[in-house]
Image 1 (cartoon, rainbow, N blue to C red):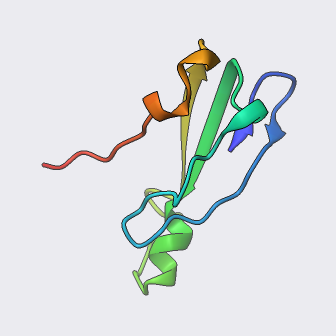
Image 2 (cartoon, rainbow, N blue to C red):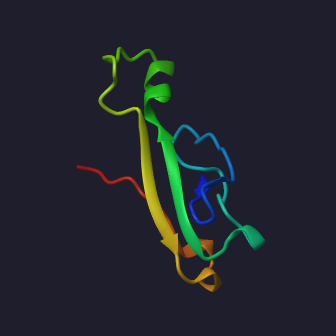
Image 3 (tube, helix red, strand yellow):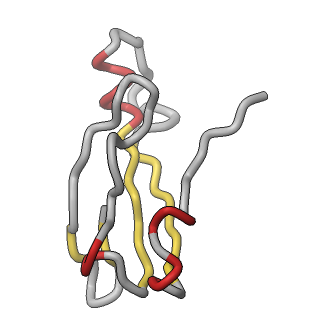
Length: 86
């Protein structure tokens, strides 16, 4: 996770669980503040780790998701990135 305001500051690195989720809040307390953020999902690393054969370069490698927090008073429990299903 990066805070983009102020030149891009690395805040935290986490590994997701078997369900593809973080085991707890990514931001909490004083770290949960107004700003522009970027999550980087390292899909290529994950796919390689489970033995997937990827082309070079892979179609999906590092997947950035940018989002903003306008009202930190709302709390992190109201912000979720979810995966959809077809």
